[in-house]
Length: 323
Ligand SMILES: [Fe+2]
Figure 1 (cartoon, rainbow, N blue to C red):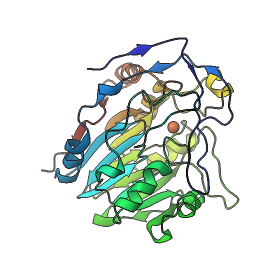
Figure 2 (figure 1 turned 180 degrees about the vertical axis):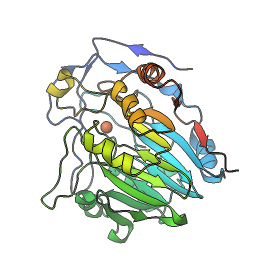
Figure 3 (figure 1 turned 120 degrees about the vertical axis):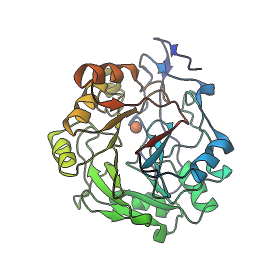
Figure 4 (figure 1 turned 30 degrees about the vertical axis):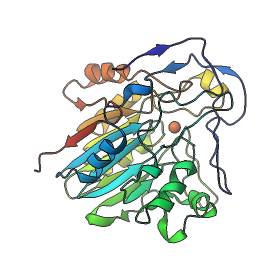
């Protein structure tokens, strides 16, 4: 059962915790007490499946096409050709400086034993790149390799993950993964394009593809003409996983970087002719959330023939009819 917790007076101040030498950026750039019309979308017992049962399902389920599991925020496990790729795994407890926790806990932690070939992070905000998730996974499973935007590799290696297990992604440079999969990094504007001194993007999305299916994980981004143009060139994008939490002046004042709105996400799905659109980035952090029902409304209004799916956390979706 999903419980909605609406509290217009919720006071929050979200910052990140960190470990390791180089710090992932805080979610909020500076400390300030704010009132963000707190919206905790789902509470503790939201999981469709979790713990060992969910881990076993991810490890053991076999299928053609693509299998997707939603793990909260922008976290997804995607399995294609038997290869398991975790995008933006955020599998640690999290409490901000005021004591406000995640709205719901992780389904499991690396200590539970995660079978994963790749952990892929889109940018260095703590809900997307968390050393409290990555380091235990690196210790527990020597098979897992890590892919992050190239300017961020030092966060992982500086914290002790062997450099041979860390790949730096650059927009447009296709990475070849196990199982014949490819991973194409796509520049993300969160909420503007940011690059380092070498011109390498700090924020990325990724298109994971096998011979049949392309899964685009947007990371955190707004919609730009460049994004639409890039994704159109990379077509087909069968599945588009898109943030829908948007942004506003109040969050901006608090230092929270914005994303596309539900309306823009639906328009992007339409513009790139995604076969299946998936909303994400809501419900986990009360100060920066959205109601995914607005995404459903926009999809139904703007492109009613197009498919979309709103996941329950821990739910598996099987895409494709390849046996
Ligand atoms: Fe985020």
